[in-house]
Length: 322
Length: 186
Image (cartoon, rainbow over the protein chains, first blue to last red):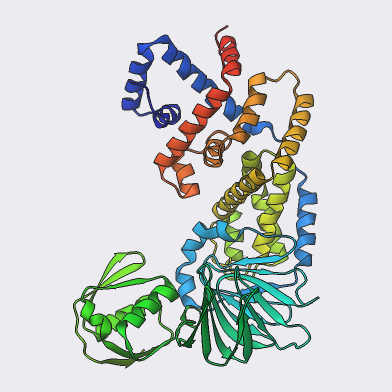
C-alpha cells in the first residue's frame, strides 16, 4: 500500500522502529518506491541547506531606526488594574500574535489579554473589552477625533466642541462632544450604545440616528431601533463590579458569560428563575460564581477551564454583599 | 546574563535602556526566524523592527513576561505568518521581491546547484500552512513537536502539512530532482 503524506513526513523526521519496518517493506516492493523515497530525501536535505544563506544585517542601523520610530509615538497605553487580567498572564504568551499588527499610519490597539486601557492625546480614555480592536486615525485631533472600533469598548471623551468625537464601527457610528458611554459592536449589523453621562448621537451612516442621554441604552439591529434600560452590569469586565436587585439567576449566568467568558451551567433549570440580590466588588469571577453557588446551596463542578456546573440547590432568597 | 536582566525588567516599566538590552540579546534569533520564514532580508528587517517597536508600545502590558526569548520568537513567527498572508494579496510586490532575490543570488553563487535555487522559489509558493510548517522544520530545524507547540496546532497536523508540502515540491521539481538524483549516485 502507498504510504500517506503524513507517513512519509514522519519517516523523514523521526521514524520509530515500527515506521522503519514499514518503510523497508515499502522500499523492497518496487524500484519506483525507492526512487520516490530518494527524491523525498533529497528534497528534505536540500531544503535545510537553504537556511544558512542569509547575510547578517546591520544591527546598529536597525536599532537607530527603532529609536526613531519610538520617538514618534505620542499615545501610550496603561494596563487595566483589573485583577482578573493578572491571572490570565499566562495566556499572553498564546495571544501575542493578535496584537502584533501595527500600522505606521494609524495607531492600532488590540486587547489580546483582558481589558486594555488606552489614553488618547486629548486625555480621552478608551477601555477595550478583551478581543476588541481600536484604530486611531492619524489625523486624530488635527481635523476631528475619529476612531474605529471592532468589538466592545467603554469611552470617556474629553469635551471639545470644535472637534467632535466620532466612533465608527463596521456598520454604525456614534458621534459625541464629551461624555462617557459603552459601545457593544461584537455582532455584525447590530450595535448597542449605553450612555453613562452626557449626550451622544448614535446611528447608521446612511440612515437614521437617535440622540441618547444619561442612562439610556439603544440597540440598532438591522434597521430596528430597540430602546432598553441601561444594564448595570455591562461594564463589569472592566470595573469588576456586579449588582443585582432581585434579578433572576439567568441574568447572572448571562453576565458571567459576557463579562468574563465563563459559562455557568445550572443543572436544575428551575433555579434559573430564582431571585438574586447581591453586590460584588473586588472578587475574581471564580469567586463570584462560588459565592452565588453558596447562596443557593448548589455544588460547583469545574467542567472545563472556562465552564462550571452548578449542581442542585434551591431558591432560598439570595441577598448578600461580597 | 539573560536571567539577570530579565529579572531586572520584571515589575518595572520598560525604559529605552532595557529595550536596548532586550534588542541586543534577542535580535539575532528574532531576525533569523523572520528571515527564514519570509525569505526576504529587507522585509525581514522591517518586521523585526516592528516587533521591537511593538514591545515599546505595549511596555506597560508586558511586565509579566518571564521568558523573552520564547515570547519574541513566537511574535516573530506570527508576524511572519501575517506577512506571508498579506503577500498573497499583493502578488506584484512578491514577484518583484522574488526577482531581486534571485538576481542577488545568481551573482553570489553562479554555479550553485540548480535544484537549490528552484527549491527556494518553490517553497515560497507553497500554500501558507504547509509553507510555514515546512520552513520551521527545514530552515529552523524544529522538531514536529516543537512546530506544533509554536503554532498551537496538533503534531498530526504538522505531519500532514509537511507531507503535503513535500508532495507539492516533488511534483513541481521532478525534472530537477531527477537530475539531482543522478548526481547523487555518480
